Amino acid sequence: MRKSALTTLIAASVAAAAVTASTQAFAYGAGDFFTRVGVAKVEPKSDNGSLANGALEVDVQDDSAFAFTLGYRFTDKLGVELLAAEPFDHDIELNGANLASTEHLPPTLTLQYYPLGGTDAYVQPYAGVGVNYTKFSDEEVQGSTLELDDSWGAAGQLGVDLLIDDNWALNGAVWYMDIDSDVKVGGADAGKVEIDPVVVMGGISYRF
Image (tube, rainbow, N blue to C red; front, top):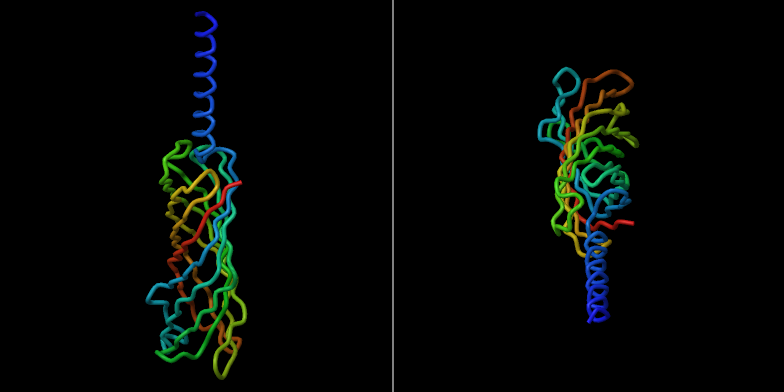
């Protein structure tokens, strides 16, 4: 009887350990490195300001591109994530005519909070705050030269992972970025453009 009871106890302990290990493996949390890959759409706000003392109304158009992130979870509930992407190419309308364009890269670093971190919940929402740096390049305007200064600004983020298994998840995220740039046309100061976009990204997530 004692041998049978001991065997039963060992079997139960092994089964419990296996369940615990499986749950811990599935629970995203402290020590996880992860990447998120997908397509991001940059949607500037509707009123981007004016140039040349109000003579030119500016309207920066939307663009989509491949984007990815790299992140790390310090604790079950706190992490950090860096957003990167291929250059976004924006047409710029001046007084309603498509007369200019620019490319930009918007690396964005956020400190994130995961309210359900450390659990085996299949839905893992998160929120983040941080800083955005935007580098402009290849600026063009018909009949002259165009220069947009690089920008630093605050950023906010909301997102969610829908867990598939121990490593893979579907991901959706949205950022707000404060992007303001001083503009020169023909080498002369022409005013400021306020882009302040919402960036929407959908894709997949993989943790290491």
